[in-house]
Image (cartoon, rainbow, N blue to C red; front, top):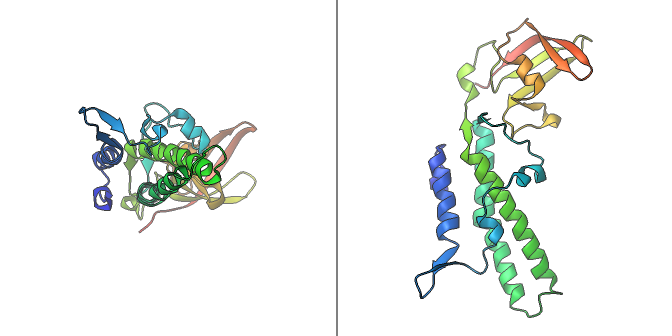
Amino acid sequence: MEALLNGNDKQSILLFYKLSVGFRCCKENYFGQVRYNEHMSKAFIKEADPDDEEEFGAPAIPAGIKNYMTPQGHQRMKDEFLHLMDVERPEIVNIVHWAASNGDRSENGDYIYGKKRLREIDRRIRFLTKRLDIAEVFDPRIHHGSDQIYFGATVTYENQNGEAHTVTIVGVDEFDPLQGKISWISPVARALIKARVDDTVTLRTPGGIEELTILEVDYPA
């Protein structure tokens, strides 16, 4: 399975998902009709739900906007997908199967928790599948040595109060304010993109207009 996801192409992701969902979780009965495995959550085979994005605190991707990702961010999502599919989900399915065999399910803590966790995993898998399907992986190393700001740049800028800030422009699914990672569609990133060292750009905020001066631009080697 892992070999199937070694590439960055979307077809590999879709094929893996179809193999995992369409074939692994269903089988033909004696009448030649396909029926789903009794331990496969129905939530797992639904189309991705917009509510999944809200649940995971992920901003929706605006229509017509590409879901750019760095190679590192894309790999993290693939690793999580594989872990859920190959490790955590099978373990929970086994627990649910064992708990169900113990009789009354209404007061069976293992069964109730297992089913709840299974629904959570299935929602996460749907979310990851949707995001990976529309991902456009871009390696910022191609801009190494440039002083112009593009996706993947680490930028140090100074605001009009003389305060310096350093941010890295990453994908929507990679942003982490605590680590200084901002989404490329955020207002700050949009103000910075295409500017160069020593340029001053304008940032429109709810509190008014701010001017930011670019001090340094860096890309991974």
